Image (cartoon, rainbow, N blue to C red):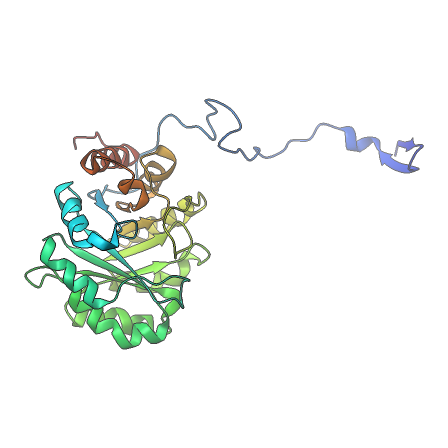
Length: 288
């Protein structure tokens, strides 16, 4: 073998090192270039399977808690599909928000469906699940969406079944670090799967792009098994192709928009823009 002697370090280097090598495509950052087909796509592929109806679901976490009822009414007037209450107990996530009484009090201000995401410890889930299921119901007792976290439920099947038995719509959430396989065996028990696209606890965080593949995998399971399940995404969702557009293309159809919607002076316009980009991601025209 031919060798080269590098005098300074007396390092032996094989001439073979200088032979051309074929490498995998490089990783691209979003700021690497302008118009790059890898990191700056101009079009998105159609979603796997038949697209499901787009729903824009604001979280009231960024709302003014001093006029929470009025903000709920404003979200209804803006054309939102549902309102999400992020329930936090200071244990599962480092923040405190709403209890059942607050959610019940907001019901008098709007007829929109509610959903509660229980970002709480297992002890709180076990003790208060019936209460949250009850206050999440619609104005005429319609099932409300009650979301439990897989990380906080040792007996996940039992928790989901109890939500259904109490007249709720059982749903499951998983944090960014949690593999999708953790919820694969309960897909037949839920109406929604919520993929957290930020670490829960606070609003205004940036979307984690690697969650897109998780959404795509869950979507394939749902379609291939012919299940009637929506995929929600929560965290950093804005009116951009890189967030709501990418999630829609991957298979999500319910979009939790907190800061991304409350940032609009005209929230009705925000709902329109978010919906249009989601439908584009699904491969549908905006007026579909």
